Length: 135
Image 1 (cartoon, rainbow, N blue to C red):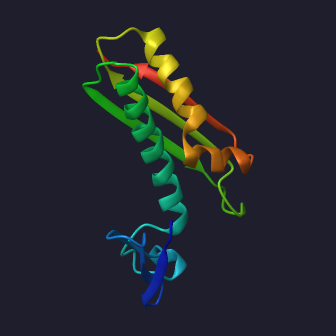
Image 2 (spheres, rainbow, N blue to C red):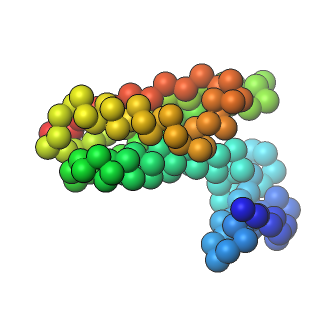
């Protein structure tokens, strides 16, 4: 994997993944930016929710579960004097005819193999992820 950062103006920049995808990043106005993109830390949080969702969908497919709706609602906490995120909570909302036990097993396997989640775990950031089956 590779990424390149290119400063555009002030704190607005474009980062790419070394393939064909790029994302604008910036700081909010209260930090001197123009709010033209997410912050790098927000991208980390977005990456975690995206990873949980993607890995859950992949494992559900392997388990032959039927998923008609999947949503990951994640919140990261960082106090004003904290250098980084201090806690994460997430809820995975799933609509499926499959049983809750199977869906929770899928979540367990997801959390054990989500590569972005491993980064947060290795950084000792407390993370709580729960599943809610939606009718």
